[in-house]
Image 1 (cartoon, rainbow, N blue to C red):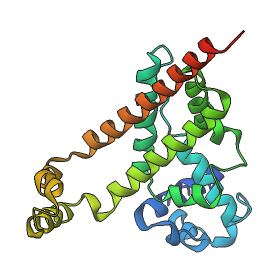
Image 2: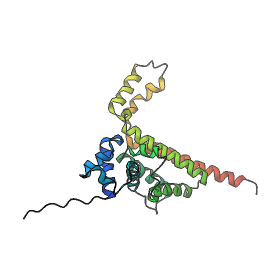
Image 3: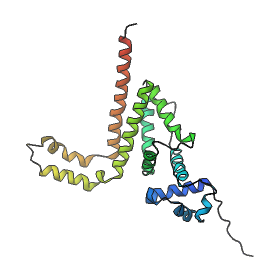
Image 4: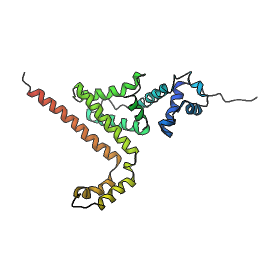
Length: 226
């Protein structure tokens, strides 16, 4: 009697998971219906029983990535929760750096699932709890999001490589000190820059700026005539 292994059932979740693996391994350009079909061991036409088209798959990738966001403990201090939320978003993007291109093309996470907006709701709620006005909540959301995404892009490029750091030091050493005294003085610190330390430094500056903004608003409210 011959026993054959039952083929794993094809589902939307399995298709999206395969597409995400392709993107992480070979980049966004590699994600195609034909490539996904090969990954799951079916003909490309079989995919359309579970997803509408490639755009639906790309939306599914965004949704899957956003579900990986780890929410900080709600009982924590607001400042620590701001730090923890930013770190969580950075880790999520580090795991799937090409998803930032999808976000940019779609001007945010996928619109087909309310679940995709939960991290956004969480961030805006944090900013509101910190004391920002609703308008400033949106401004802070864009500022923090831009900082985190930009930092992850920097980490993924050559700017943080040892070769790049060495070239900075070599360039600084070759420049006339009388014209570039500060660059000459600080150049050796580039080699000491740790990615996590750099991220935390910038994050601290942004959170302190947020707190200063809140304090400034409170002072203006207190001084306003009744």
